[in-house]
Amino acid sequence: MTIEVPDWVVATVAWQLSQRHDPDKAAFRDIVNETVQVNPTFVTGDGEDLIELLLNGGEN
Image (cartoon, rainbow, N blue to C red; front, side, top):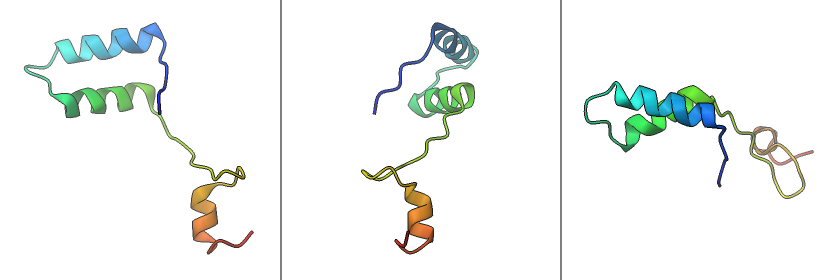
């Protein structure tokens, strides 16, 4: 999945990474997640919420 982010997110992440000594990929991912606060909803091909579907045992 690809998510396009606005320039302010790139600038914020770059600044936060510059404040760390030797950041790694996990640090980058953590900063991006904190900055963007992505909270995806997973849906089936029919548009049903996957978590709700699984919690309800596959019943509609």
